[in-house]
Every structure is written in C-alpha cells, then in structure tokens.
Length: 301
Image (cartoon, rainbow, N blue to C red; front, side):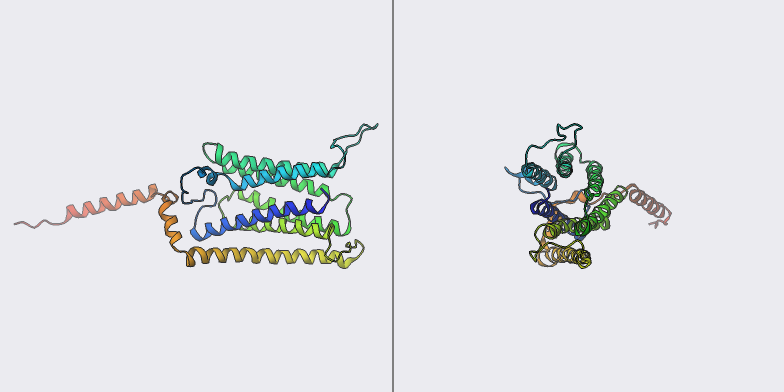
C-alpha cells in the first residue's frame, strides 16, 4: 500500500491503541492494580452486558486488520497474483504481499486476544503475549526487507521506523519474564505511540509534503530534518503520556475521589488474602498468649 492512506490508517490505529494503553496503565498505577488482570467494577447487567466483557483491544485489531486487507486488495491494479505465467515465472507484487502479511498477523493477533479473554475458560496472558511477540518479530523482518531498493529520505524514514519496532520487540520479550512490571508497559505504550505517529508523519513526508514539493534525496538537510522530526515526535509523545497520567491522577484522586471508594468496594477480589506465612505468625502469637495465661498466678479467694 504505497500511498498516503496506507501510512495514515495504520498510524491512526496504533495511536488510538497507544492512547488506550496509556489510560489503562495510568489507572493501574494510580490504583496500584494489576496490569495482567485489572479489577473493574461490574457494569449493569442487561442486554449489552457482554460488550463490556469483550476484549476491546482485540476487536479493534481484528476490525482494523480486515479493513486494511480489503483496502490493500482494492488498491492493487489488476488481479492479485503470486506469480506470473512467463517463463521463467516471477513473483508479483512483493511489497503488497508484505503488507498483506502484516495485516493478516494483526487480524490473527486480535482473534487470539478475543479467544483468550472471552472463549477460553481461563485467560492465558502468555498466549496473548507470545502471539504479539511473534507478530512484531515477523514485522521487523518484513520491514528490513521492505527497505530494499530505497535510498535517501525514504530509507531514513524506514530506518527510524525499524528502530522503533526493534525496541518494541525487546520490550515485549522482556515482558515474558516480568509481565506485570509497570515500567515495561509504560515503555511499550510510548513506543506504540511513537510507531503510530511516525507512520502518519511518513505518509506526509513521502506522499503529501507540507511544502507541496517532494523531499530531495540528494539534499543532506532534508535527510537531517527527518531525524529532527523524529526527535520532535519523541518529545510530543512523552508529553502526551505525562498529560494523560496527570489528568487521570487529577480525575481519580482529586476531582472524583468517590470513584476510588466505589472501585475498592465493588472489586474486593483484587486484594490478596492472607498467605500461609501470615496465618502461621498468627498461630505462633496465639500460642504464646496461651502460655502466658497459664503461667500467670491465680489469686486464691
């Protein structure tokens, strides 16, 4: 999908997904909640009760994947074929098939999220994380191959995108050993925002430049400004995360503190029950009190 829409639409999806993750992470940090199985007050039971339990992130991935697959096929001039009938035969539409592979992986990722949360008897977070890691490793390989034959500004744009995807794969791999660590989820959310905003920026740089003149591959200043714009995206996305956390903190702690009490009352299952060490300590203290009671002298009448 070598056009403006092909960059902006996936970028918008990643930005919205990153904003959703930022809200979830901010709420988990404020309430000291678990990121793997966040506690939430039950909604009113009714006709639409099942929609609240549905994996919204998985549904967004699946719908976006279907839309992008249909749009990719629609943008191909002629019939989508794998090989032509010449002798010897040659592979056709190499970049389009790479795009389709990316969108198919996104759709499968959404299907796995919905299956894990809404179909399986118990949610399997490692299945979701494993499929997500596999998706980004494949995406990294496809992007590295996608830069073949590019140079100048386009190569610089794709190289910075590959850097972001590589960092996401590292963070997701680290989450296998620390799946409930706030720092990793925060970095992952920031990188998703970076990937989405940079994809949209790439659409404007490569297909609709603001100056109405195409960027020059032989102009070193244009290549340097690509990196400068990337650094501006880093600062803007970091400020966006900080603003979301500050607004969430103000909303839940200052403006609407009653919501916290409602949350704690309606979600008592989140708090862990006393473990065996605590029960053993109680038994030891009780036995010591019984011994002290037996040793005390009784007053004769």
